[in-house]
Every structure is written in C-alpha cells, then in structure tokens.
Length: 347
Ligand code: NAP
Ligand code: ZN
Image (cartoon, rainbow, N blue to C red; front, side, top):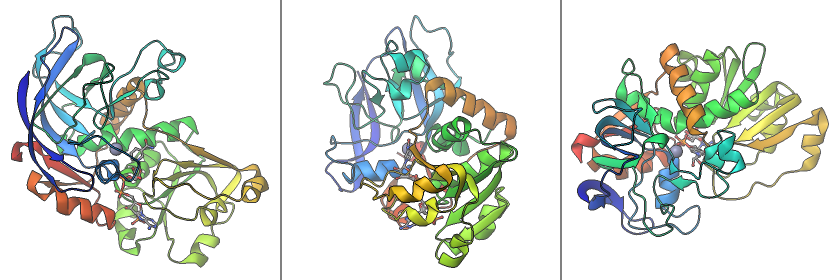
C-alpha cells in the first residue's frame, strides 16, 4: 500500500477537503500514474451532494484524469514508465459479458467499476478518483494520451469528450446533419467542437446569452438563447440530432419540438430526477428520445485519437485544489468557461 494525498468529501454535501488514503500496490496487470490534471465534472458534484441517491464516503471524486505512468506491472506490455496516460469514468469491467465482448464495457452487464463512489470487483474495496496525486489501475482500462495536446485541456476528454463523441458517432453526426447541443458547459462545449470537426452543422441551445460569442468561436454555426422562447419555437422541426447536456431538471418539450423528421434527442445530462414526456410530441415527425452513457475503452481511445488529429482540447480554467468548493458552486451556477481542471501539484 502507498499513501497518497487527495481531496475528499467526508459527508454528503460536505466541503471537499484534504484527505490522505491508500492506493494498492501495482499488481502484474496494473499501472501506476502520477496524476497531473483532474477535471471537475458536474457528475462529481451530483455524487458528492448525493443528488443521484446514496453514495460512498469519504469520496475522492474525479474521473477526468491525465498523468504520467510511474510504474508498470510485470505482465503489462502496452505502457512504459513515462508515457502520458488517462483514466476516465471506470477502471474495471468483466470483459466477458455480451456488452464487453462488443467493446461496450461502459455498459458491462456484470460490474462496471466506477473510478470513485464504487467498490472494486470484490464488492468491498472502495475506489477513489482523480482529485489525488496518484492512482493504480488495470492497464487495459487506461488510455494512451497524445503528447501533442495541451495536457490540462486533455483531461476533460476522458469524460466530457467521450460522453458526447459516442452518441454523435452512434447517431451519425457528419456532413449534411443538423446537430444541436443543449447546454454550453463542460460536455456541451466538447459536443460543439467534436460535432463541428465531424462536419455537422451545429447549433447551440443555451440559456446563457453571454455564451453566444464563445459558442461561435469554438465552431458552432448558430446560437439560440433558449430564454427567448420565440427563437426556440422558430427552430421547430429542424434538428436531426440533439445532444442534451443540461444538468438541471427542465421541460424537454420545447426542445423535442425542434427535432425534424426521424430526429433523436439524446439525453446525456443526468439531473437525477425523471423527465415527464408527452408521447404525442414524439409521434409527430416519428421522433426518438434516447440516452447515452460515456463510452467504452476502445471508443474512448478512438475519441482521444480523433481529438489529437483535429487539435481538439477542452477550454479550461486551471485551478488550485483549494479552489474546488468555489468551483463547484460556479459550475452549478453555469458559470464555468468551460471546464475547471485541478492542477494536482497543488494537492
Ligand atoms: P456543466 O458544465 O454544469 O454544464 C451543464 C450546462 O447545462 C450549463 O453550463 C448550462 O448551459 C446548462 N444548464 C444548467 N442549468 C440549467 C437550467 N436550469 N436550464 C437550462 N440550462 C441549464 O455540466 P457538465 O459537466 O457538462 O455535465 C452535464 C450533465 O451531464 C450533468 O448532469 C452530468 O452529471 C451529466 N453527465 C452525464 C454523463 C453520461 O455519461 N451520460 C457523463 C458526464 C456527465 P448554458 O448556460 O449554456 O444554458
Ligand atoms: Zn463526468
């Protein structure tokens, strides 16, 4: 066991504060990573504040992790000490079920082991996330990260990036497709950059008029401020794909009405409360309502390679660890441009 320093919530909704804990020794199939940057995802806040139900405390959040490999297990061939590497939302899966065999181990039917707020496959040992100096994980759940991209900006790709990339690929975003992104936060701004790089026509649906110039600068072709209900209504029957990244409990109907023929609204935002849906709004234009959760390891690597080829990183505000609590409040107030990333050297 090795002692590492991190930041944790000790109780539901409690302040995120300095916390020391143990990481396991590096086993034959493991690698150890000296973490350099860890993104703050709204999911960290939902879980630390128990907005998704009962959680495990102390909780060291963080599932957007980038750093350098510091040790390699005896049976690991795909990493060397010094390599740049990343960890996202999960650190283990069974590898055998139907979904794992399909490469969709984010939907493992046996035990997707979340990076924190979970237990290892033994059902007992708690997992601790990236708001820390180091982590040990199975090498086959660790990603290769290109040295060509800004490292702080890469960290958010590990969750925000893959969470929008996967549905954009699945629902065939590309030239000739009208894609809308609801919410211009951490996920949303990655959705804009990735959908634009895929060649789609991209519209941002944001409740913050102040984000218009930023949206257009990062590749959006249009911006609709949803506070202007007439402007949103004027977009009726327009979009082929809508990626809903909104973290709050909202009425989806005004957005569903903007779906064109056979259009799909994909929920990736997870407010923790059920949506109320009038099926009649889906019947017209033969629309679909769908959901998507992160992506498998294989697809996450594909996304990282796509971003390296296209020079895509997240727009980040790098913070010291002692700013995490203020950062949480600013994320909840939609006041982040566009992802807070912790410089873990400050832990
Ligand atoms: P974020 O940075 O806080 O972005 C959410 C955005 O939603 C805000 O920037 C804001 O954009 C919009 N919004 C917030 N409150 C709103 C309201 N009352 N009405 C309308 N719009 C509102 O959060 P994030 O890290 O991108 O995460 C977004 C959601 O996705 C969270 O619920 C998170 O848990 C979830 N998530 C899901 C997955 C998955 O696998 N499915 C993965 C990661 C995260 P504007 O100011 O532009 O309107
Ligand atoms: Zn996340």
